[in-house]
Image 1 (spheres, rainbow, N blue to C red):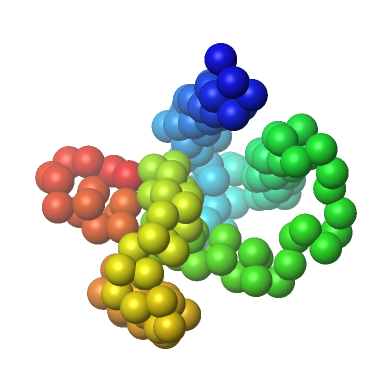
Image 2 (image 1 turned 180 degrees about the vertical axis):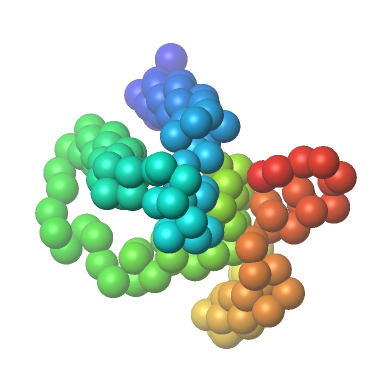
Amino acid sequence: MSQDQWWYFVTLGILALLLWMARNLVAGRTGRAIRAMRDHRIAAQALGIDVVQCTALTFAVGAAYAGVAGALAALLLDFIAPESFTYWLSILLLVGSIFGGMTSVWGAVVGGLFLQFWSDIASMVSRDLVLTVFGALLVLSMRFMPGGVAEMVAARRPGQRP
């Protein structure tokens, strides 16, 4: 097995584990508390949810996932510098989360796949208009799919939550 294949399978295994953990977190009691806090903070507090603890837990889980991603990037690239993570990368990650959907685990997967394959899809339209098509797609997705692709797909399937 080559080095690239080995890294692919290691990353795929870690992705599967993290998706399983995220799905269990979201589907459980903690996930319901996080959704309640997101939808209406005062009502969640009135129901007895410790909003401060829930907020701290949410940031801790997000930081843990970012730490795993950073560790994988450092192992793969053998070098990490602040210049590796530009504003453009932050904008791309934000756009991916908006396009996929910020309210579900599968929305993050769809957003990541969108970012990975975006340049190939956009280059089929025009190499010179990649950023223009990117911006138009972002505006159209925010207008017609405010919850992202995952929420739109879940809305079409009766009885399913993203």
